[in-house]
Length: 227
Image 1 (tube, rainbow, N blue to C red):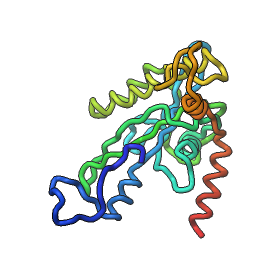
Image 2 (cartoon, helix red, strand yellow):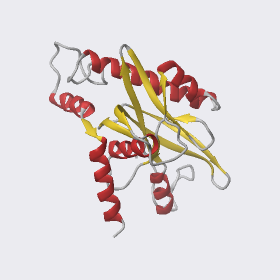
Image 3 (cartoon, rainbow, N blue to C red):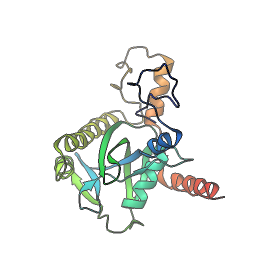
Image 4 (tube, rainbow, N blue to C red):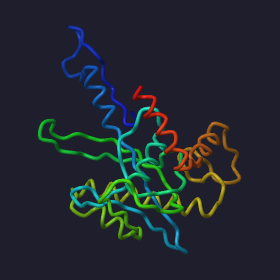
């Protein structure tokens, strides 16, 4: 899990009662709480627009869903982008940011979902397989307002911050086409020697996957799990 859980399975008599212990079933439930989001964008002249979809309750959100067995997080996010918004495009392999979503249930109380956000450049749209999602383009400022609406202040602020970070990254990539971005954590400025490990991290960050390719991988993974 990207958020990580420091827990121990089982317990011995001499261990402190303040330590949190989880059964295997609980650990599996926590793994299912990991989600991915596709932050879909397009550039029109000097303007960056973001594609949001609606939840069943009518709130605006990024195409989002659970991490799937057999898929990388980027492939799972690409699948959500297609299924919820009909997106064909290119997804960054590495997450550029993340956030925590809290859901309240009748039986389990509040559940925290760790969401890994991936940047997706939209090349074209088709009618999405999922109905009533209403994929709609918004300017960055309007997208932030839609994401804040009808949400708790802290959660709305976290979602708006995702848009701000996406804008910064897109602008950086457009200034240096085909190059790994500068100001990533641990990446030094131009003209300064960069260690090989940092260069590798930058290349991984900028690597793109085609959404059609991810859909094919998802189909094979689901077929294998059904056997």
